[in-house]
Length: 138
Length: 261
Image (cartoon, rainbow over the protein chains, first blue to last red):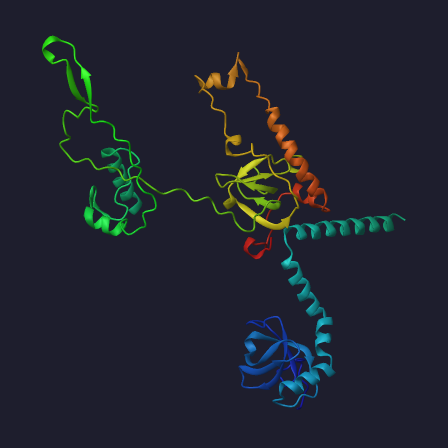
């Protein structure tokens, strides 16, 4: 290649992807093999995603990827590499995954719990306001 | 359009027949008064002959057809057999249909499974719409008996239709608390009053606006008694009284079908 690309994430074997639709939506998987310009074979032996062909349209590329995954690797090899590189832990720690988890949590709250959140936010606002006022006046 | 035609047919029937008649449940009316099926066809369709006869007709004590009466007057023979029920003096010229007796009984209203005693409900209609209240029990009429409690959010003991209510998953533990049986549908009925002679008499008394009638003490006593148990249960959970005090509403970007209650 003459010049480096400006893009950071590529559709490549070993790329960790987030699924956006279907029964596994919200889970992550790894690209095991590229079928064509529309679909790839993905597999997530440690995240509960079965090996399947999946259209790019319904997945998002994450910054994570397995560095040394050979083309068309089976579930066993993928599992070993995922565990070796601790990809799932890395994903769970990422702010992207944490934001998603927080969103899901917020959505699942019931009416009374939402009220509790409102009270907690109010208390936080109050505390911040008072501390700032104190700091300014001294 | 269809509704109009139905209304016309109904009014036609009401004019010519006594009220509460239920004609031609099975046999569709072709023109008013004439059904698609004959009487025997309807009988076959209703298939009442198929059903198991559960009750045996009670043997009625035969009233004697005639009674012997003593008749005054010389040439009247002294005694005469008189029929107990006098036959009609004339027969109707036209056949009069016997109205069909309805054997339908109203089913008790089904209570939504998400509503149990102690459930916090959100009222959606009426004067107290948006208020969060505590469900106590379902009344005979199918309406729900709820209370604010009155001291917490100003909602008194009140009946609401469950259609105008959101059931939340939040429940308070009322324990073995039972609402007094006297609080039933008739408890909420308005006392019958004679209509005032004039609008003037209804609102004014001696040139001044009428004094407001005081809320009956017995009812406020009932309210307090019920609320005592409810408030005790509410106090067990932190912030719950505050929660009941606030009204519910949707803010921007919130949609009720996407919310969990």
